[in-house]
Image (cartoon, rainbow, N blue to C red; front, side):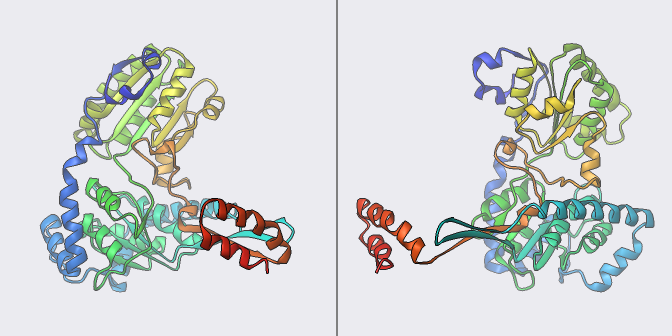
Length: 429
């Protein structure tokens, strides 16, 4: 039944059968890179730009001496961009900006007086400098810089720098420029994360690093977290669909393969209460792979990480979906809104058959940088709130001191913290 089932209650597990089970574990498949990434981070921290150049030559075949993209290079990349591609990119930017602005409007400063003379509140403070990692990948993913840079600009961050591999398509430079990056550097991989975390002679250290990448980028983000913030640890992409007998096997198969073409380690799945749908979807996937131009990527992803689970009832379907906590979760049921209301663990939810993951991936306005590897159990995806800090403050007058000092004095004394007791009592004088 696959390794993920081992954590389930046996009674729950008995209610699930697999038409297709996962063959490999995406998490353990990355364990071997930890030591290499640690070495890369150490070298960049110690040797700065020289180490970045060495790794660029080793991993990317790049002999760049200057990492930063000049204004002339930006304009050249922009001029080379197909007009329709530029228009579509600007459409995506506007949609992402509009949604980020709507989200930001819900994050309000606070001032309250819960007791006379006791004033508490918080401020919404933009993070000063953001580092956006923009993956190169097999294709020029123009939506990637939009999702990381635009919300940072809306949040009011003072500076946004972007790092992308030197092998990235020139259109990606144009995408970073249009999205609003202040500075763009042609540095990729773990060395880019190290440079943004520690700073080098030419690349400034940032306060938070955002954006997806490959396993090396992900591991580097994990190792630098602490002195520098990160958005999340983004593993291989995921798409699951919860469906009943109303599901369309051809549509579900198409959606799974659309996501599977991202990477050979993409996790794709169907969780359903209808065995006939499960079997029909399995057949549809195998058939569609025969003429899919990206089957060399989507095929291995489906073979190794694809799954189709048949659940005994709707409650089990909901519970298993919440256990998986998929990055992208589609709802294809007779009443998708009702089903959606019962789900709680996911990165982003796609309610009803007309809500395609591709629309969100590209241009509808929600962010496509989302939690994977079951992180949807405790966090959502990247959003404008990822680029601000909610920082509390307080101030008291004599009435406030009279209210809170006595219990603070007593509690400090009970805990044996004499210094605390004195500080609390001092203001009563």
